[in-house]
Length: 454
Image 1 (tube, rainbow, N blue to C red):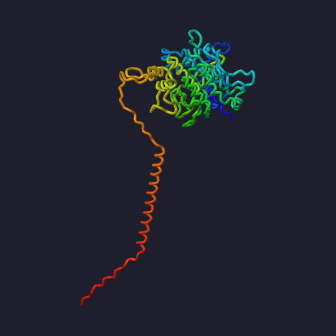
Image 2 (cartoon, helix red, strand yellow):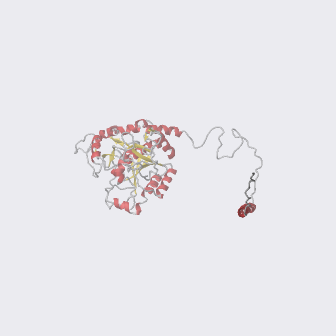
Image 3 (cartoon, rainbow, N blue to C red):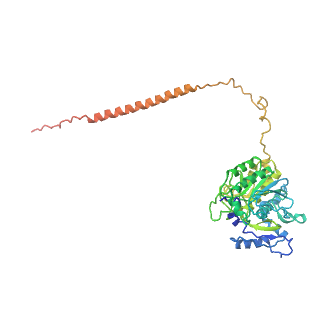
């Protein structure tokens, strides 16, 4: 059976099922609920093993207020003084994004659906998980001054929606996981996103086994300057070292763990040596399809937040290579573990403002050296300023005759064998002489008789 290339069902048990959807205030028929965060905290404790979603309502200003702690942890307000992600495209490889949600309207381009044929004809995709992730990356809010609703880390970035997974509740979920034709959807989605101009690719998805197709697609993306961010996985509960998840564990991909409200590793977050950084992943509020709002937990949410930080860096420094973007993110953390690295949270908890500051330092470095004494690699070396003249004289060419080398090697080998034979013969002769000497009887002298005197 094909392993599902997504956050579930195992990761989703730690994330999406512990979610409280809340419709916005645009639905007057529903009563206004109390604080979304407070209600979510209670229900998360009650719904640990529940798979049903509990609907409710929320005022849009409550939504923004519920995001305040996470935004403060990420330092986004300071980062927005530099950039808000304008000009950047973030591809969301997920279950699809609702382009009509009022917090995402105008920012979403619906790309290809690589799951076509898995659902029965006429069944529309739910697009819950994908919309949720997209809002954390590039939600721009709505209302007067866009002060209501979800605000993402990079609110001026554009989203390219690429559908590569199905929600657990969709009727084609089993077909999608069992048929070989869907085995390479993630690899194909990565290449599609790169060819459509993505600057960052968010993959809040995971599976246990890597594939060559995905590894090749990731190499292709990095060669085109695209930053890849993926979820570390949600199988860490009760484990000291959780398994590696893919595509997060491929070289070049930013593997994101989830941090709790104390900025320590969340109990469900995978812990392994390939975790790059961590981001808030507990009680994270985001948008859902149909102008809904959701609260959930998981490395999926943490991954989307880090993708937003990567989008800010690429917006300010569009030509910065993926390796330098990763370096800026890992160097600009707000909570670095003792010793500099920890398998639970990687190099620390991401901070957008500090990462941009590190990116500014890295952006000053050039691939080609400049200044006095620097030689242009496209031109021949000439004696001149800063270049000493080297007078080495004629170059002596040493000719090696392979036949002579073989002959003398053979002579040396034969001499060595002859020496060993001689030593062996001498050893044997010495042993024989010694044995003969041992066999010759020795004359025993007669005892001395003392003369007696009388």
